[in-house]
Image (cartoon, rainbow, N blue to C red; front, side, top):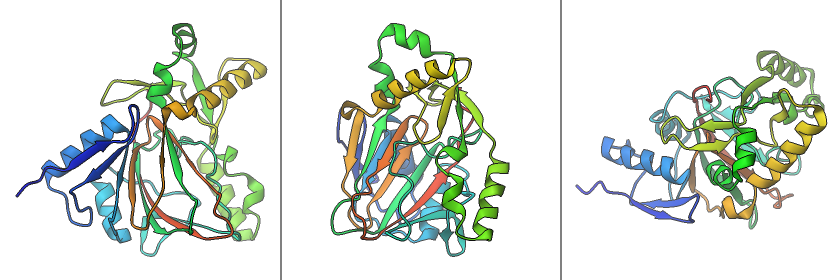
Length: 279
């Protein structure tokens, strides 16, 4: 049986379309190895026509590593590892900014798998940006300045308290999440543990300051980096169809989910794969 999968690059820096594979079935070792190495190379992979149940999505994600359980987001019935992102006018999205998932923990996720369950008539695209390409595009003096710096990442920057006051129970969950997730520090420039490539590792969603700099210095440098990493040169944009799947390397990418579809509804399921401590 031919187990070779098709991988088509979507750009010079990031993104590939994968076909000739059925994710609803357990992958052979040969198939998984091809998928894994394609992910390291292309940083985000897209697959069409892959209807997955929450259990199948969890099984697929678990091939990559242990899974994260989000402290606030709701999950699929009986599958707590699968986040349900159900956005509409009554529950507007909070991920329409550039961010790397869950960098507010000591060991941020290595990757994630997102599936499209219900989509608006138009809009709702997601963009990914390559931290590797963004790092490589910096001048040598700026690279020297950044290498070795640490930045603080804070859960509360994206999950503000006022959003979680609709009930006493919801506010209590937020307070518990804050208590369990104090601010952490990560390198501004991290090294990919497999490829050895360097990537910018600050994001608008969770990074609050660069440690050791004065406030205005930190703000100026972070604002520059936030703008730099999201240049179109370093991006790939995906227009979703139902049952599409995206798999991305969270260690070296950021993404942005467009919120241009409201008041229509958009439902996505996400599995988040735990990673290691950035270095």
